[in-house]
Length: 414
Ligand code: NIG
Ligand code: FE
Image (tube, rainbow, N blue to C red):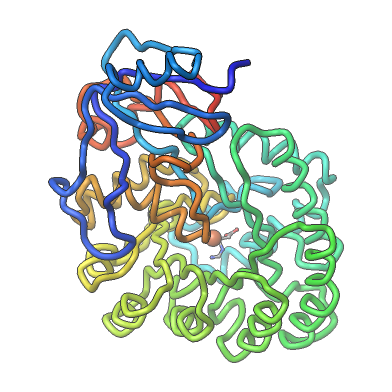
């Protein structure tokens, strides 16, 4: 295998090099490079430039040359910054009941809700969970998603959360895409825990956190802040302990009621995700902070709820990422590009804002600065769409999928 590879020429390449981390983006601001190639050194981008010129450079480096014979648009690899793809079982019954007008409480009383998935996931072996993650992650990879965040949160005890995070680690070792694991032990108070919210969180932080470090299972801690899960007052101490141990913080915030985004800002979290219930106050708070807002249109579609106020967040100067929230309960579809395009139509986002939301701004939501833009030194993660204009990708609302997916300098899907 040669150390250097050249791929091109592309009709259009959208590097996103010049795109700011925050605020609105007009499509006209995108710098679109025509007739260019990408020169790869091992897993990284060595250079990008005019195809005739870069071909000479490639020859001097004795690079392998992969010459395209049709029109392709090249985008950065997509990043899905929020998923729950480690789970077992189906919640199709919840979906039918919800659409039939049943309330959250009625569904929970009938044995549905998050606890149903906890019960199913606890029954699965670590290997079975790994297999499920691989299957779902490979589906995402084929649609151009080269980095996938995956949460625990359906174990809800030290040993079961460990089983989930070990399953994610082992899936990551057997996958072309990168998985970014997150501990969501604070998803709800487990029904079988002999204690209250405070003692549960103490158990997790005192017992689980050190093992997460020891086994290198994750550097991210998440919590679901909601009346049915954990109150802000429950969570501050938990997050403070996590931060003291060097974990990054991310929050399920303002999904049905507010309170979570304030915790995210106070704790200097990397991201605040959901935000469907955020009002002008939370929008101002988030936009004036360094916290990345993550919209989860898949949950709005799955639950039939409002979308995150993405337009207002951007106009207020905020950073907006878009993720799928793929999970068996609120967001069973798991199709990031489709959902991001739908959010774009309802929230009046430019194509550039949608693209940034699933690339460079999504990388920021994971605190990763080595991907999400096509620039020298970044990972060579990119997608080729068989078209001559990037607008076509969004116009087809997810139905145009990449013809080729490249991850860390190798073609992983075509
Ligand atoms: O992000 N909001 C909390 N957690 C998930 C849903 C989990 C479930 O219903 O299984 C979410 O939407
Ligand atoms: Fe979620």
